Every structure is written in C-alpha cells, then in structure tokens.
Amino acid sequence: MAIDSEQQAQTAIDAWRAEPPRSQLRLIAEASDSLELSRMYYEEKGSAPGMARVARCLALLKARRAELEATALGS
Image (tube, rainbow, N blue to C red; front, side):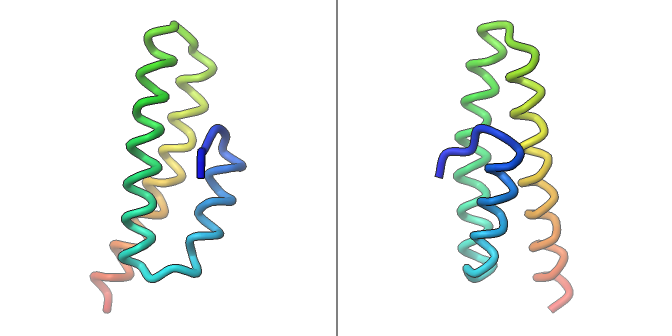
C-alpha cells in the first residue's frame, strides 16, 4: 500500500491492526523505507510541503511502532 498522506498512513495502520504484531512491525518498516525514499525525492526537488507531509506520515508510523514495541515488552 503506497502512503502519500497522513490519512493513507492512518488507514494503513488501522488495516494492519488485524495482523499479528510481528507482521505489523514488518509492514511499518517497509512503509517507512518507502517514505524515506519519498522524503529524499522531495528534498532533492526542494519541496518543503512534500517533506513535511512525509515527516508527518513517518511520525504516525513511528508512534504505532512504539505502541507495538511497548506492548511486546509488557507481555
């Protein structure tokens, strides 16, 4: 699933909640890698709005990863 906005990031996170935590972490890592490539593209193009949008998407993914990791440590 390509993530191009915060809404798409949240939709992806919500859809992934049905997956086991390990799978969710893998999906988050893959999406983060893709977004990092997008960030580099926008950086090269000098697109501040694009870089900001990607940063917000990455923040959502990072927050979900932290939730999953906290849950795993608490188990």
